[in-house]
Amino acid sequence: MDVLTQLIQIAQPQAELDLRCQMSGTYEIPHTVSSKGTAPFHLVLAGECLIETEQGILKAQAGDFVIFPRGAAHSIRSVTTSNLFHSAYRDDSGILPMNRIGNGVVEADLLCGHFKYEHEASKLLFQSLPDQLHISLLNDESNIPLQAIVDWTRQEANQGFPGALAIVTALCQSLLTIALRRFGENAHSPMNTLAVVVDPRLSVSVQALLKYPEKNWTIDTLGQISAMSRASYARHFKETTGLTVFEFITQVRMSVACHLLSKTDSQVSAVALEVGYQSEAAFGKAFKKHTGILPGQYRRTKSSFH
Image (cartoon, rainbow, N blue to C red; front, side):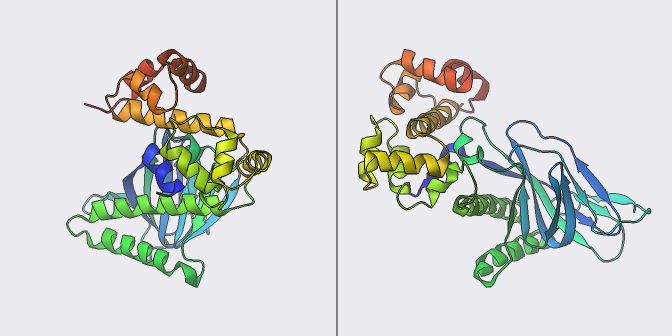
């Protein structure tokens, strides 16, 4: 199993669709800061609009997918403006509530939703992402499969056949994976923990670490898996991810532990062993240092196991 798939299985971010927006004329739709563990997203199905944040203004066009991993405040605005703001109405007859602004030709058609994720279990996925993650799915011929995903999403949203909402939600879940892969491929991003996804020398050792977090991992053993010397492995790891090897090992173990505590009924002592701690006391100390609370407290606040 590849590294990105392993990280996603640990974090389990879940897509939820909120509404569809079709806009014409002049408009501005503000979005306040989202709660912790909520990452709003917008998929531009057709047309274009402006997305404004504290960092500036992005012109989003058909096929653009924009995610706010830490729930940053932003506004959706028309490309052209005048003093006349058009009236808005809501239509609940489709698979999603529809916010329609203005009349005539639709100038921007957006699918809006959010990803829910557990903060601690998702650190390795989300910590190095920018406040606004933007990928274009239609920018070259190599993206023909991605164009098909966008077209399929638009068709399902338009036609509203049985199961359409489930299909559109699953497609948005796939788009998140694509966005994370794209970011991991961006070698120019500093402190990019997702760079291990595509780094040929690191990914094989990280796969082993994710599969067997309970093992007594050292820089030497991980370096051997990657066919690198201890010094070369440690240096390359820090340069690539911004983390030391041991910082990364700890984050992997704590992410897996958070997943097990919230999704299973395993005893805390068993979870400790599964992530490489021989005593519950040592695990509890490390867990509290990493998350701020003890494993039992975390389970009581986060557990979905029934």
